[in-house]
Length: 32
Image (tube, rainbow, N blue to C red; front, side, top):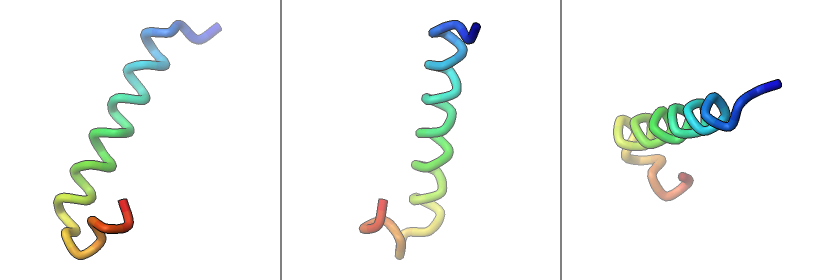
């Protein structure tokens, strides 16, 4: 069973990765 902490950590990491990707690719920011 996956704990809520693991789920939260993976969600936050995913969001952070998406944000960094958007910042690195400013021309795609509107698509984020």
